[in-house]
Image 1 (cartoon, rainbow, N blue to C red):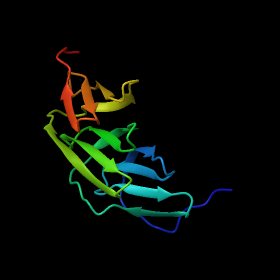
Image 2: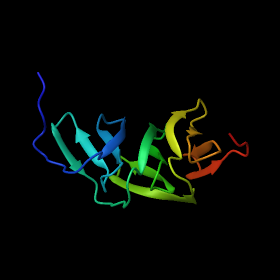
Image 3: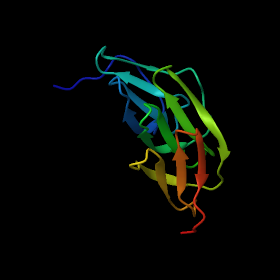
Length: 143
């Protein structure tokens, strides 16, 4: 059996990546949408967080950190890493900024808890997100 939740979110290519939080809710980082989407399977509802992010194709990859937060590497319009904090139902961006188009489309959590994003066409360096220090940086090698 399949069905749709009653909430309606208009537009095209709204979301491209999501991650499951420790409490079972699903958080989707915005691509063309402006807000983070939250899907609550236990309550059978969805809603958006209040923080808004402008631009198109902002985020295409996200990963759950060991501390329960979700981090999304910037793709096209976004220049900063998006942080989603399910424990507080808020989102924000890290301070560091990255230029380029189609920067990161894939990421993975390493055994030490850092998140690594491989460069796509608009980036030449590996992005490292360190949740324990709440920072991001790039490795020095070019690809």
